[in-house]
Length: 311
Image (tube, rainbow, N blue to C red; front, side, top):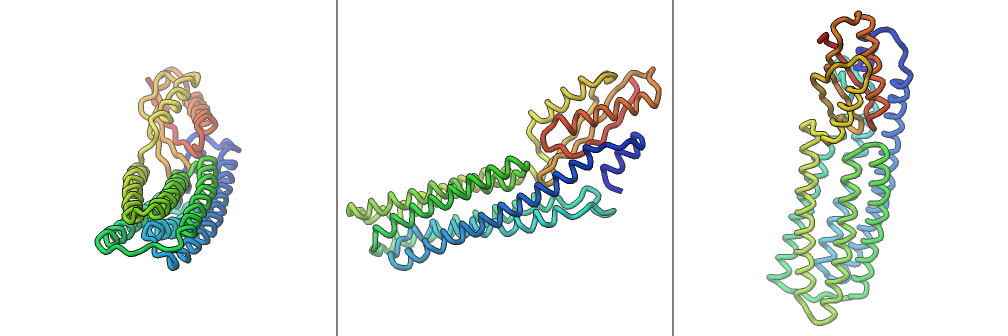
């Protein structure tokens, strides 16, 4: 039996159409997420391959670092794709909450890919500082940097927009990741200008700067993934849910409220204190109304399990 079925059985055999809509919305959200990762994978792969072609001609280590990072960013779309697909599977008696957690686990792969990008970029930059080599075709290097910026910004805007719409922190974080990559691509242009001015150290220095930017982004992304895996949630959402529950007629107090993300949907469990003089039927109706207020008032909340206790 699923969580929604358990809630319905516990509080009476009433038909809550919003549960059906929540399930449909979840399927549509997963489909939108899959579509977003497909498009971003193709766009970033083309961007990275164009940059690698220019890297082979020019020998720019800054452009190599940016190309590797963009390629790694494209690859992070693959686990997200798989996670969205797995998350669409129905809950089972073993996985009673469904498979939405696969999306959160995909975030671990995203973090690993960012870390590998930082290591490769840093190693190449240090090697070029120790053993300098000329950078050729500076105009092409600058153009490739602009291509990297444009490709990443397009993908970033798309990922962030879809991620916010469907409530996917993993997809939104990957969009921020792409936007940061776009800024590092502009740094490649700065490195090419520096080499053109006769500063031979500019190219590997930019490579190190890109490495530092990747490391900063790695820290914030790892923090977000950790919070999701540990059932962390924005305290503002908890406060909003508590206010909604407290306003339900018949609720004396909110004893306990637990909320967590599973994939791109929120699940909640609430313990309410109601007047001891109300009947069992009235208590069930209060719990029903509390559930209704939560699922309609809190964005991305798909199900709520509500218990009513006498004061």
